Image 1 (cartoon, protein in one colour):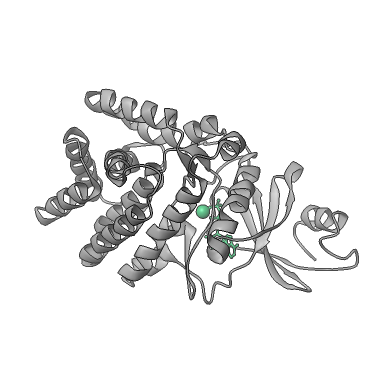
Image 2: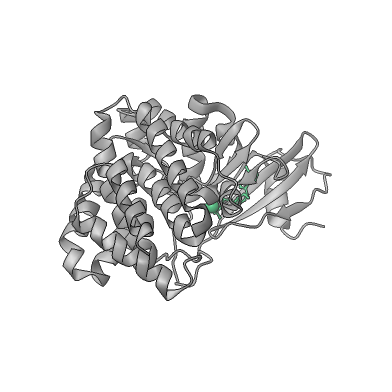
Length: 334
Ligand SMILES: Nc1ncnc2c1ncn2[C@@H]1O[C@H](COP(=O)(O)OP(=O)(O)O)[C@@H](O)[C@H]1O
Ligand SMILES: [Mg+2]
């Protein structure tokens, strides 16, 4: 007997499951903002994702459940561009904030964050992550239709710019003019379809390459945000797992190089510069924003990230290589 008869009944009502089926919904762990299940069907396993009204984080942080539809729409836009590198939407029950997508077996699709934590890094895989993000950005750039379908700046403001950049600006008044200007500029940019949560915990390491999940923050805006968000995650991992710091820096460079090679909608140097400024700000936000990185546990680690990020923000980073080199220098003097 399933623990979620409402979901099973809704899937039966839509004809997705036969009326007499008695399938099991197996919860998948790892999500903080949704219920995610593996569901066995006669055609094999599928994945069911339902948005929660309250995120499972310490702060009382609510996010509108309509983000479920935003994610399904992002998947529909990205799938024709990158194929199985993103799940296929099989069914959406918009009123229930739920959709069904193709399932990637965890035995063959490990979460990239876990791979990184174990020191299993691979610059070729990292390059493919960069190329994947660029392919979605390039395929969606300059589309009036997508800009209209993803007019989600308010959601992006609530889930990204306010809790990260604007919150860090309140904690660091001396940097507030820069951080607020950066948030304002980002919010006003309309270039292409942004994923909004390109984190190693949302990327599966599969035999065919990376699979990108979890596009609840999707927004038609500044593509530099995706490169920056992913880069900040990789840089924080140099503090979390110092033994692999050089590998993570190499991976970050590989993501950036492959990403920039796919930029065809504007001069690559411009995205690179915006990404560097955003990366510095996001790094600070991961210690002094509303969503601190849970794996930075010691005062020393947080202090290092804070002080280094503050230097990077004040130093006006002109490109990702400049930022990566500055971070590396900081690590060397720890
Ligand atoms: N299509 C899928 N196939 C297999 N596993 C998935 C799929 N979608 C999500 N998962 C698993 O569920 C976890 C949480 O999913 P995610 O979309 O990131 O939800 P959340 O928004 O809660 O973070 C992922 O880390 C992954 O382990
Ligand atoms: Mg996730």
